[in-house]
Image 1 (tube, rainbow, N blue to C red):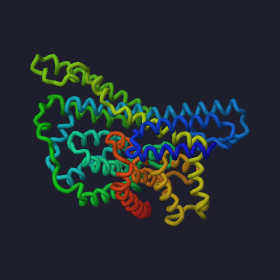
Image 2 (image 1 turned 180 degrees about the vertical axis):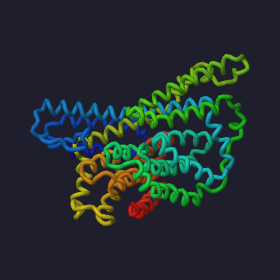
Image 3 (image 1 turned 45 degrees about the horizontal axis):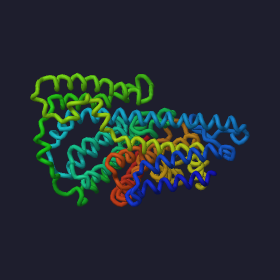
Image 4 (image 1 turned 30 degrees about the horizontal axis):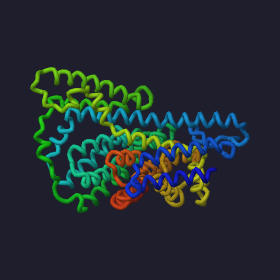
Length: 464
């Protein structure tokens, strides 16, 4: 049965990557793959010898000897656990996307367009890369990617040009998320799991992460795609700007930045803070919208959508729901593999196939190779279960260099494939980026950044 589940996952994975060839939206194989994987888990629950307890990040002892009723109950609890964790991400995403759309409703991103005085593609690339690197460390790489690609869509109208920028934003956002405890879900796991501290994380990873962003961006700035100037559509510039545009931009971005602060103060999951932020932004949007439309008939030139709906309703209608459902499908399918201990077994096999790993870890050598392989593995398989497996595999103390290298490797290695990171999955949904286009055009840049950053880490760890 395990072979059948892996086969379904591989076939679904291939259908997602071949979306443009088979003419089926990637959302469909993701949902089908998720449903069939969990159906096979339920049907074959009696035959599985092991079960992975996600809450404890370890294999459950004595699973094979449990009665069938308990096994079914355990499976239902695990399914609910993963649905809860996935829903936290999806609700968080819905909140962030809605805030971004409310900002756009008031034409808030035109304020950022006003700041960008240059039309030179290479300069705009550096602006977005640096913004992604900084923002992802503050508001996490997923939200930073959503915000910056939304802004990008308002500035770069040609999709063929825009997807190049989006590819580099993914690399920069993942690099920026690696050196912050709230920048990436895997780094947050290590931080909450008391494996790393903020001070040491920044000290170890700031330089490697910066080089992981800067080197690919520097190389890309010489590529033909980033030569010359952008063609800005003049009619867009002539559109009347809302008097609340700047206010809503600063309020919206400030509300998103507030989320990690709320999490640190209350220790509640980030989606709770995002819902609070959305509520506050929505209040101002409704108030500003009323004053905007109650003036007189002069403002009746606004579109029908603006005239007949509240800003919140209008913004919710513009959210890319297929991207949300795609995310649900792929995360829950990975959760099925994780629950059977398959991903844990994959990570464990890295340990078993490498000699000396059970001995005391040292600078360089075998342990470095294993962590690098973990980074490459996180591009193919979701990095969350791989890091979860590493939490159970290694027993090194707080702030040991191994944990920081795992944080960097798992956080940035996912950039090598577009479905290897949450930022990539969201960008793929928002921009309809082809898997193989990314593999040919962007993956090698991500690989170069990953290797340069890894070498830099091997230097920075000697300073502590």
